[in-house]
Structures are given as C-alpha cells and as structure tokens.
Length: 184
View (tube, rainbow, N blue to C red):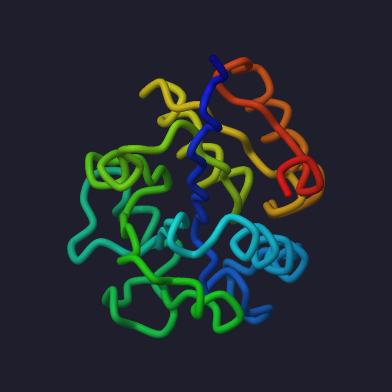
C-alpha cells in the first residue's frame, strides 16, 4: 500500500499595496522578487488551493497597538482602503475570501478552518521578519506541517529576512525552510 500524496495549501501572507509601493513607509524592498515567486507558486499549486491574507488596521487600536499606530498614523485606514488591496499582479489568483487580521500573525480559527483537509502548507509573502514569522510560529504550535518558501518571501532587509528564516529553521521538523525549485 502506498501513501496518498500530501494535500498542499499555499498560504500567501500580506502581498498588499502598502508593502509593495516604494513610497510607502512600510515598503518591503524585495517585494517584486517575492511577488514573481508567489505567482509561480500559485500557478503551480492552483488558486483554489491558495489562501491570501491581508494585514488591516483595527478600527479602534487598543493596548500596545496605540503607540504603534501613533508611530504609523497613515495606516489607520478602513479595511476597504486601496492601501490594503492585494497587488494587481496577484489579485487574479484570489478566488477565496482573504483572511484579514489586525495582527502580525494571521493564524486564527478561520485560517485553521480554511486549511481543513490539507496536510501541509507552503508559506510565502511579506515580511519574513514580521507577519510571516509570526504566522509560522502560530501554525507550528497548532501542529501544521509548514514549509516556508524562502525565495517567495521578503524581509525589510536581506539580513532580517535571513535571521527570520534561521529562526524558523529552529522549529524543524514542524517547520522547514525550502526554496521555490524544491516545491515546484
């Protein structure tokens, strides 16, 4: 008897205008390269197996988020603001409702439900050193086999990107860092 192949979901974290626009205070320098790799990943695994997340500002920040948004007041935009849109180059692949969160980590009961029936997930997006890392650690705690596609992610700097990947690698075998070529 042979094992059935693992059902694989692709989780695309926060590939949004706010992180793509070079003039945005939250611009992620490696975004264009990550976007290209994400498109290849989604084309290979299928849009129907892909879940996109969006970071959105809370309507009313509380606690430690208050000084955060005092530092970044431009971001206090409603969820339907173009600031939070998935970039046009990937929007065509959004066939399921996005999973929105006003937190860095996107793991939630809703995301867990979206992943029901899948055996593992491939993670891509931005920024490696913030929302990707936060989400991966939460998924690992939930027991989800997680493969982070390094070249389909981007950090605030190449060094921050690598530090985040190194931290994720510490969670093996629950989380593993792979390259695009390995999963295509």
